[in-house]
Amino acid sequence: MNIQNRILAKATTTQSQSNAIVVSFDFSWYKLLRAKKFRLIIRKRVPKTMKPKWMYCYIKLPKKAICACAEIVSVDNITKTEALMRSENIVLTSNEIQGYFGDLRLIGCYKIGKISFPKKEATIDDLSKQLIYHPPQSFFILSKNAKNLIDKICGF
Image 1 (tube, rainbow, N blue to C red):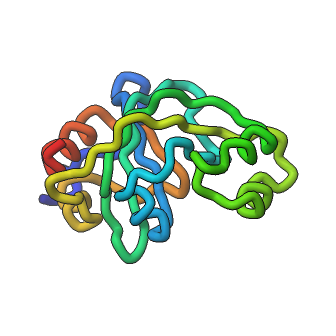
Image 2: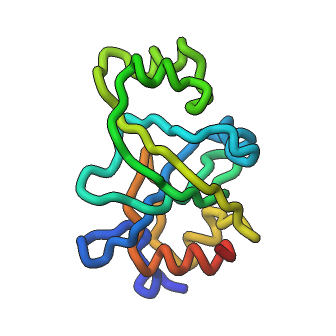
């Protein structure tokens, strides 16, 4: 498929936005994700203009694939103190949490519900054949058409 026929993965207008985001994770999180070890995900950047319902989890090198879809229960801000008290749900040590916050007073926190795994993981090659897709640094809002295509590729 040539570039003119590929679908934009990232929503560029409010009308093209789906109810889903893609969030990047380091490969070290893959086993924790598969084991459903965490229920809270802290991030310095979270959506501010929309409330996503779904999080597609993109695992970076060496996996380079969308490996799960999690229901988003809420997106809020959390203090360092709250994060430290809830570290077992975040699956980070106290030192890791303190290091991540640095001097910030608040950061974003996704509370996730059910985590689903695809029949087939959507690799960067699968995605790039049909989408104009660049893995996010932190997150991006999926376009409606891209969400439908990823659901089809993954069998969600």
